[in-house]
Image 1: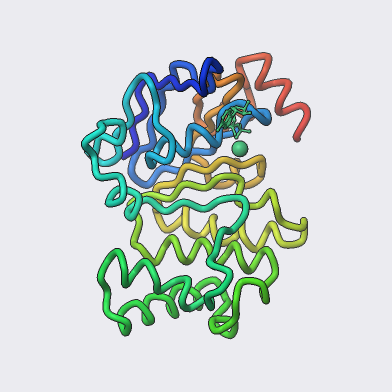
Image 2 (image 1 turned 120 degrees about the vertical axis):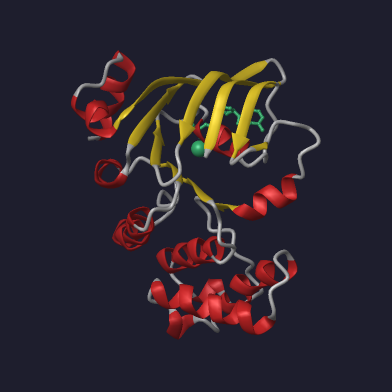
Length: 240
Ligand code: ADP
Ligand code: MG
């Protein structure tokens, strides 16, 4: 579903990604990990065209993201993205946060958008809070709203960039639980995270990055039990 072929990217003269190649099959969960500054966020942003690449190609379900003539707005509407800082619209209620793009981008009726919003918010246990504004919710609740908002667009895949790293420890699991459920429902997911318990539990593969390169791209158990590179061994030694 997502094919990344030999991409390289520079910020000015600084090379942030170097010859990265990987793929995510339909229904697969791929965890991307690696030290801070290794290019994980950049890689994931390239997938939905939030960042251009200077070399190589990215294809999402037949759509050439790196082709200049591709309508990225349309593509982004079909790929859900969840960031570290929830990025909800602060001046809107949870309900409005979930309805806005459904109505404006997908042209759903108010009733249809509302029904979808309520069903999704109920699934993450927040229906009693649907009329509240993001500022009235905890970080964990806001992140669950952000995930629901992305799901309201019926995405073909979900991209996560450290969705739990801004949360207080006691809220991490309530967000991971939602992601585990999503993975088990068969959602195609690319997840930047340091939550190795989550990776062990649901990832099909782990991509390990260092210095803009994909150093390892392995089946989850193999990555954890027999990391090949010294850098991955080092990384795992520090965080496990
Ligand atoms: P990670 O998510 O793995 O921490 P990033 O993809 O955010 O890494 O960043 C990789 C490298 O690129 C870092 O050295 C960072 O400082 C640099 N970088 C990120 N964004 C920009 C930018 N807009 N301009 C210049 N350098 C950037
Ligand atoms: Mg990052």
